Amino acid sequence: VYDRTPLIAGNWKMNMDHFQAVSLVQKLSWTLADNDHDFDKVQVAVFPPFTDLRSVQTLIMADKLELTYGGQDLSPHDTGAFTGDVSGDFLKKLGCAYVLVGHSERRSVHAETNQIVNAKLQAALRHGLTPILCVGEGLETRQAGQHVEFTKQQLREALEGISAEQTAQLVIAYEPVWAIGTGEVAGSDDAQEMSAALRDEIAERYDTETANSTRVLYGGSVKADNVATIMRERDIDGVLVGGASLDDAEFANIVRFEH
Ligand code: PEP
Image 1 (cartoon, protein in one colour):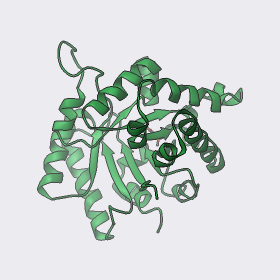
Image 2 (cartoon, protein in one colour):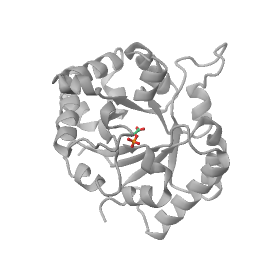
Image 3 (cartoon, rainbow, N blue to C red):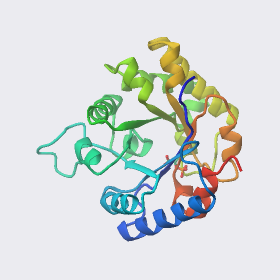
Image 4 (cartoon, helix red, strand yellow):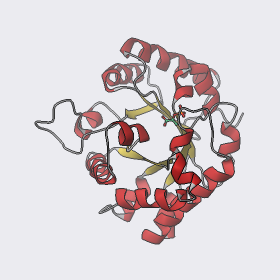
């Protein structure tokens, strides 16, 4: 039996200052508690901006909330002369369980290559953080029918030098760039095709046991009214949500996709 507990992750991007972050976490926790949400059955993680993490940690610890959280990015380095960067060590010490690595906005806005993504993945693992590795093709690649090969290549290059045991701990998020923040959700069959393809790639690279242990999420315009269809697919173990994670009621309804 493989532990692929569903994970619902909310990427806040550059939204919510630390006052707003506290308010959102409180409202979300209240709604989930009110609905007797079982966090062992469906895990929930939020990804606030760095400046919010201390406030989020303090609140979660004080109220013994079962919500987990992580950073949206990390430095490939551990410490030193890297102005503006934040290390995995610092995130771990703030109680982060996860960190996003290689989000498409990092790749496009900050020119992150697969090599940088690989170095960040190694840094996350070095500090005991669970990386959520984001991969996915742009519109032109999809229209050219190259999406499977392109995304598998991103995965291959990101996993350079990473062991089967480490890969089994990973979360992979398939996020087609054309579906992020556009309101255009991938068809659940397309999302399933890609998740299965990524799992096949892991099986080829390592073995089926590793492939069956790795969680694969879908991301791209997920909302409360389309999440259930996506979660029905056999190779999809959760969702990474951007815009819809900023609204407590909407995000709580995504978390409660089974209801
Ligand atoms: C994301 O930021 O990872 C994302 C999927 O955004 P959205 O849900 O807004 O498309």
